[in-house]
Image (cartoon, rainbow, N blue to C red; front, side, top):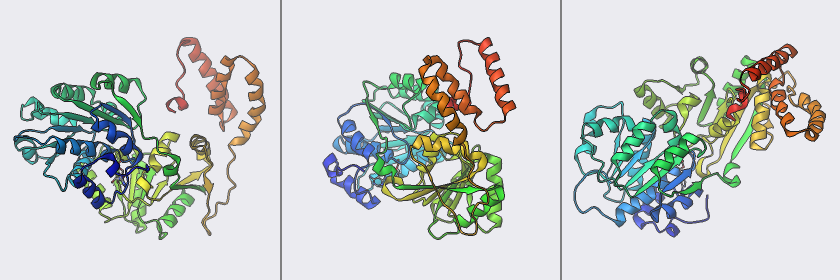
Length: 453
Ligand code: AMP
């Protein structure tokens, strides 16, 4: 949270009143960064993952603009917000309606997966804000039923994800249709990557770059700990025990594959732990149903894979449980961000078997703190914690030596790390393989497990 107030951001009192209704007392960091710049009319490029309050960061200056310059006659949308997924579009639409509650502003949502008749108000009636996914909107643009000529502001939300999902051409086309706009804002979980850079260079004019790297005080609100598990059965016992504890009121359980998700969801069901589940490539209606069952509290457990859960805002999640550790540390940070949102307290628990230890070590390094080990009486692990660091320690000496050698040699270290915990034959094979690869393609770096970190 920033030390500013919403009044200091010079927002109209009827917007501030809506924020009070929503329980927002102070702007979040990204809100106090974005709102003044956006209100000054500049293009914006902000790195702001979900959970930072980014939605209100663009909705507030949008609503303020619409209040400052009220429309003089009926007409199509003046603001267009593009998002990668239907759920996100629906959610932003709901937030926009809440923020505009005391105004006369009209908000509509256009997404695939619903009958065209539902979009009639957006296409035929005076609308101020349209939130849309690119595919369906383009269909209407092509059919000349949606008119972009009155668009004054364009917002691209979760731009990185729109790129990942292959929407780049669609977004470019829509942006070209909305070429009379005066302002563009781009929000993305990260601003890295060449794809995003060239994409934004085309769409934004001299943007101010902002980042909502949550300050430590905001990050600290998530308690994080680890339970060590001897084997899959022990892990399951730990999970059911945790889920039955009174403070675990609403939890998301992350698993790594769709198959594991289905298996876990049904085992929990058998234990009387009712849950909803979310996985990639899921029927749209089922997704919405699963999400709303969880959102309205019909079930308090959501089992999900990473693919399925990005960009979805689920309020009041007390616990994030990593039933499987994520493959990379940044995904860990993204997952645990689902709890402890915008000032609420949250807890992230990872269930870790011996073979996960190298991953755990990487995560601890990435977040720069060791994760506390916790035990549940009656379910203490029988095995001692697997030590990953020992091999590293031994390497420690050679590392000191290596430091004295030319920099090029240091590269060897990544292979050392990769070999950690592997049997000797595997190390030898990997090294031979790497040599052969290098001989073939001298200029390229061999692909490695670490490449996406
Ligand atoms: P977002 O990053 O936009 O998905 O927002 C994350 C969560 O924080 C949502 O549940 C919002 O309702 C909530 N939120 C956003 N801004 C504030 C604020 N200023 N104060 C409290 N909660 C907020």
